[in-house]
Image (cartoon, rainbow, N blue to C red):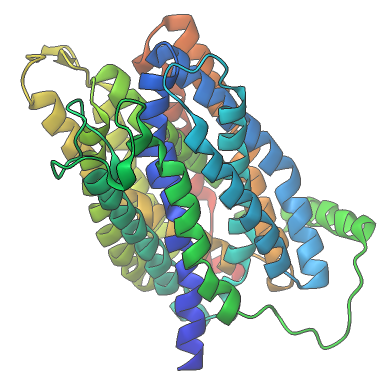
Length: 440
């Protein structure tokens, strides 16, 4: 019973952290920013791209270093606590993103810090996974965690749409005024997404700190940053002796970067190209989160039965197809076939693609962290997850930067998403060089 409480409390981290991805990045704040805070969607997509670029560079540089230090001291929860404080403060500050704001620097700064804090926290929580279950059960554990996260994102999204986010009429999806007396004219019902995300995290992270233990040290260990950095450098060099781990890190660098691009810019794309409002995007988000929950749990079983690499490969193929569908869709045509801009056909196609997007995304992410556990040196697991975060961010500055550049240069949000498709294909191809059996 005690071990189950520990496992469930660890899984609650995904539940607590998911709203930053569901509400802030994709379905509520991102589209609101490009529609109401800045002058036009093209500028908004480019500015969000710059913010994601900065967060990617910071995480790429410091996450493996923090991982090496944590492996040396065997202490992870103090780091998680520190970044949790940054997370709560920065997400709360998104409340100040007022409509038609002239200076968006501080809003984008808070947005950037929030995602840096979330990524750093995830490095340490992922590294705790091997101590929670037997190796043969890690796939199901990871899938269940992602599934619970998607469910948390779904419930928080329903709360936002039903009680807070104002439609053009000033009423919520349930036909009532925004809760808490929030002013729909000032878009306070939408802006409350920041404080709600902060409060959600602060409440649901409590069981993690209460019931998930750090590793107990048999002998005291002192912090030596120089040694930690040296060990990190040696670990990178030693990847040549672990070719499957190296290939996996490189492959995941590309396909995870592409996925981040989809999550960060999917809602922004729909708001600008398909002219969807916040409520329509919220409905899309409910659909994607529902299928994501199902996909994550089903993917965990697929992972445990057939292996993590197989699960990732199958789901990546599905993601490529979904991305190509979304890329070819606009309000007036689908790959050259004309569509009635006043009809619901573009919305229906996008909703179907969104459902499939949710279904394949969860298994890819959960199976990826399971595969890393099997490929990594167990004595350097936090450092390996730091490297995982590093390679996941090594091109993360590149994709948003390319999206920003393509968007500015072409004046088209559709052309701006071309880098996502290229990165997906590269990652999918490189995964074929990963040999899991050779690491056993």
